[in-house]
Length: 204
Image 1: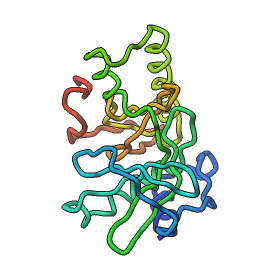
Image 2: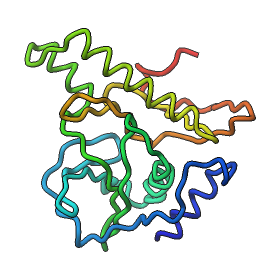
Image 3: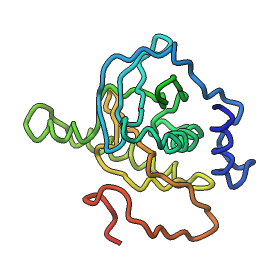
């Protein structure tokens, strides 16, 4: 399993010397070390759970039952984000495989998504000062600048409030790289397929 993830990362790398990846980093987490606490979110193809791993809270992402025949998608995302290391990008801890399904283990963000915070502000449950709003936006900008500065660079392709996560201090981090792609920094790349969330897609 770990070698399969490493192989996928090698495919992503344009230049091993310039890559920020650490190919010796252990990827595989034993299923016995994971204790699922509760479901905390879901997307079109995956569910996200709060879990405990080595005494710390983590988020685990797994494909919904109807998509489990396409586990390679989850492995590809894990291989991609395993190289990311930035305070405004969700941290990847490892990959876990049980007899029935596979999990991607990631940093847990207690503040939830920016989408949920916006909704709470709309109904008066939460308030954000101008300073807090700017800090959230600056965090997103820093995270995206890091991703675009990688070699090869990472194009997220589904940046939206639901994929911006907040910690307990409302520090923002970019997450959910299921639609992301790495592209060469030296060649122009054109995506011919429309992917992402329509309301948040670039008009071009």
